[in-house]
Image (cartoon, rainbow over all chains, first blue to last red):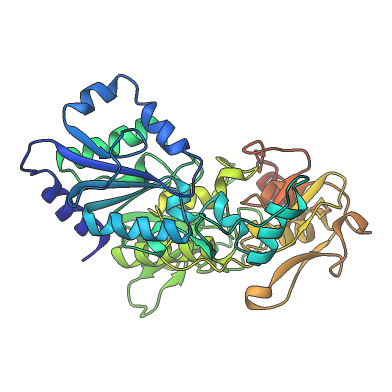
Amino acid sequence: MTAQAQAATATQASTQPAAGKVKVATIWLDGCSGCHMSFLDMDERLVELAEKIEIVFSPFVDAKTLPSQVDVGIIEGSISNEEDEHKARLFRDRCKLLVSLGDCAVNGNVPAMRNPFKLETVYERAYLENVNVNQQIPTDGVPALLKTVRPVHGVVDVDVFIPGCPPSADTIHTILSDLIEGRTPEPIKVTRFGA
Amino acid sequence: MPINAPPPSVRVVTLRIDGLDLSAREDETIIEVCRENKIPIPSLCWMDGLSVVGACRLCMVEVTGQNRLLAACATRVAEGMEVTTDSEKLRRYRRTLVELLFAERNHVCSVCVSNGHCELQWLAEACGVDHVRMPYRNAGYGVDSSHEMFRVDHNRCVLCTRCVRVCDEIEGAHTWDLMGRGSDCQVITDLARPWGESDTCTSCGKCVQVCPTGALVKQGTSVGEMVKDQHFLPILARRRSAR
Ligand code: SF4
Ligand code: SF4
């Protein structure tokens, strides 16, 4: 099945939730949170959206655990460490439709600019060379960095890709509305890499 | 006499492109006829005013009776030719070609001086590239900022050779060339010496203006500030061939 067909089928599934509202979860992996800020930039349209969707897990809300069944999962940020990878897999397992939001999630973007360098060099640069006080490479309580930063679809299947750094509020609104109404979104008509 | 009237020795042929009946001079290529008639075909290495290399393969078209695809920039029109510029198969190939360009080097659009004014970005939009399906190569390439006015960032080069051709054919300096093969291939100045030490470069800036991406840019530009102006090229090229 093509990604679009998948998206269409998954969308249909997502538009018939038992409880009426579309359950949406969002997560912030290796990104700058700009995509989440852009989401908030929908301003008063958020009020109208709130009547159609319920945010069940997100940096925007208090919920601490991802419910076992979500209609639309939105991922900001690339997969840069073990925890990112684990969270992306969890989202894939529990979300009927998975959306990569923003260039970091879609193509690695700025986080992936470390890829041409060796991991040790990256650690040294960040935690030793550019630090004056308390130079040390953190190992306790932080997830290990992966050798290469990957886009989300480098780890799990993704249904909808929304490039942009960050995608504008209008772009997010258009595509989210398409998904809620059961239309197949066409992100490339409203955004692009680096937009 | 209108400027474009064919010289008496050149015949006019009739052909069909995407179901449209058109006439063209027999010495024209398919892409030239398409551009004149506003039939969109994506292209990257081709440029009005430069010689043809047929390197990027984005302008591939279907020609009835041919069992392979032909590059529209490198194929002359012929009497009775039937051309298809847009089909499911062509769209699939073009999309894949653009994705491969993104996967090969490090085009990080969000921090590029050419962001918003880049032909590779436009091609991605036109070909429906909202993500790249193949793994990125993640190989690092060099940046040469030794020239006092310009900079070359090989991470963003798509090896279209427009710079090589404009410098040789229009400016007459031949500063640029290609070195290496496959993924090691890169553009070089003066036998791979730093651009700033070049004896041949006249600092005219033509290569910077024709470069489709953020590979050749002016020093001192920040994200999205490098806007290129290519209007000079067809004018200079026509003056040159009229001499
Ligand atoms: S600035 Fe002019 S002379 Fe120098 S490399 Fe570019 S096209 Fe050639
Ligand atoms: S530097 Fe620019 S013009 Fe020259 S080959 Fe690379 S992309 Fe083409």
